Amino acid sequence: MRGKILFVVLMTFVVFIDVALGDKEDEISLMKERFFEMVGNKSKVELMTDEQYREKVAEEVIQRFKELNILEDQYLVFVDHNPKKQLIFVLFFDGQRVIEIGRDRVSTGNPRKGKDYFLTPTGIFKNSLENFGYRALGTKNEKGWRGLGKKGSRVWDFGWQKTEKVVKGKKQQFVIRLLMHATDPNFGEPRLGNVDSKGCIRISGKLNEFLDRFGILDGDYEENNHKKSTQWLLRKDRESVKYLGKYLIISDSAQW
Image (cartoon, rainbow, N blue to C red; front, side):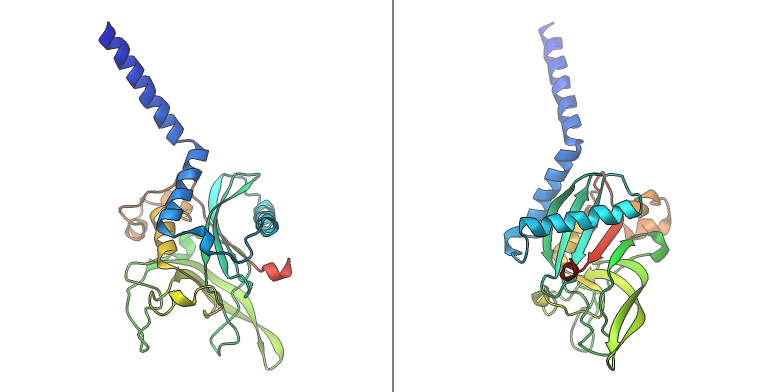
């Protein structure tokens, strides 16, 4: 009898732990810890992370989701392409609140740099199978750059998007392929935090690993993981979060 009682108590304890680990707040806390471990100390990203700024970021997210009638709990990525900020946030949206998981530095487009350089467009963009992502080959260009990061790094493709650039004193419209990807670990990463790209979003290798491993933006891909192409792209050792996201929001805090 005593043994049976002990068995019941132990089983009850195990069930309680399983339920607790499945809770939304527990997953959010876990992702914050994993971000800190994998990407680094958030305190190193000191630019404009005061309370008023964070409130503006949250307002932008809520407004964008409201416009598309998006109500489901999910993760998302937010980029501020303001040249004075160059920040990227991993966030969680629960329908009412926006919770920060972590932040890092990025490099967005610098239209003043040359002919093939453009301003990174603003808006909300979906990571979907319509613009299928891929992985970097890790090859170097003539200058020794691995433009998409080390071999196997994830490349998120958000399709052809409109942007603009001033040419000979006149603002002109252009269309660019909007990507988010890692950059060369030796040459590109030290320059993160500055406008530097041709229009894409350059992120650190550590953030690339975090987003890829936990499937932060892979909602559409996981829904179609029965397809061979999707199985090829998604890593075999992934630890997908429960509340998978799909959206990248790019904004310009200079316009707030």
